[in-house]
View 1 (cartoon, rainbow, N blue to C red):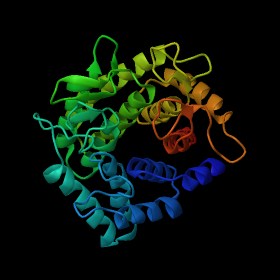
View 2 (view 1 turned 45 degrees about the vertical axis):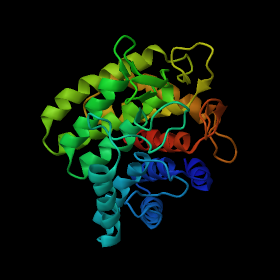
View 3 (view 1 turned 60 degrees about the vertical axis):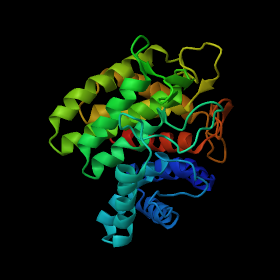
View 4 (view 1 turned 90 degrees about the vertical axis):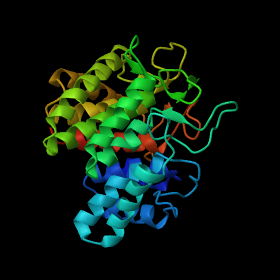
Length: 318
């Protein structure tokens, strides 16, 4: 795992990448790495409170992915600098971020697609926003946001999430069952379930665990023999992706350990982990994943590295 960590730290990072990479190192217990990353997330915040905003001027939800590590860094060090960053991020989400007409936080403050409005939801945001809201003592708002993603992006016929929808215009920007997007959803749901349990909010767990397990069950129907998935889950012509496989594996391992996932899924996670481990090059870069920055061709990405670190960390606890 050391080479994978080194390679990840060498990659340039947008706000969501800073957040998920720092979170991965936090889950792996690498205090000497995630605390400095939390520090820089606060250093590079924007005046409105968004964290890690190097190169991310249009993003709304992605900066929140760096929020939990700022909170945890404060708990670890007692340095008010970190909690000031976390509180600023929370204030932005609760009071400043653009929202849809039914109160769901938008993914960006602009549209990247011609003819669409900025009032878009991306399934990526289910990982970025609700877990941070939950750890900052806003579990009901986290649940409201998750309900919004389910309402607007969930495809009940397929049992999967679509990628991007313009809520103002009630039409999809990207109407595909993107594997990595559904992986983001799994990881986000897992973190909220676990925080809700810590808070004694069994009502939230009772509502979200069926969604998590239903998504996981559907996910597995598309698992390839080597444990990975197609980049578009139900498109046989789509390229093979290892990022979603590691997101699934990390979610399965932590879910089994925390009691809301069947142990029968461990074999699926192990198969994926072993295959992706074989795709790590001499420099620690994971190959054959959905590639940054556009994620429409096979390449490499910081979140692939992070998801592998998360899967390794939770797997090691067995």
